[in-house]
View (tube, rainbow, N blue to C red):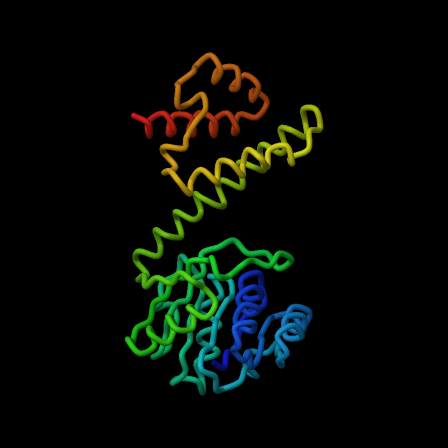
Length: 255
């Protein structure tokens, strides 16, 4: 397929590379900054622009991978002269109809992305939606060229998928950040000592549910240990609240 990438951020970079390796032709990359646009265009062997008015008119698919708040504005600018083209966005929390195009859809790869770390796209579950059956099949076919796992999912249910991802990824990673800060402050212990523990926790989830894999003082409701932990967090009341809320939630989940 001939594809135009609107955006050159973390997701667009990884998706663009995966599509290019799968044999698709990336016709053009757009980004607000020349640095971002030219860097990705160089990798994908295509042209680039920093002006939405100069985005090419014809392609099989236009993939809009920009910040959620920018989607309506970007779509409005791109609409002129491209009314019959298929436009899709990549946002987990935004409805398909945020794109004001006759042919519109969603291609949501559920993964955390960073420009400087390439991921194996074949294992990433991708969720697609379109307002037309023909375009839906087109998106499924496109997704299957880069991923082994493709689901149809409407906007309403995708909101909850994205919410679950925030709990499983963003909130979990924030806990890693809090743990890293505790280690640094008390003994300057490298965070790497936690990696075998994190790896084993994640590995268990391939053979059991998160509820079954849960361990720790909150499961046992060991108030002796938990009270000591809360005392150690006395200088950071917000962390105390997090500890208390998590502990109660874990305990209640086991009942």
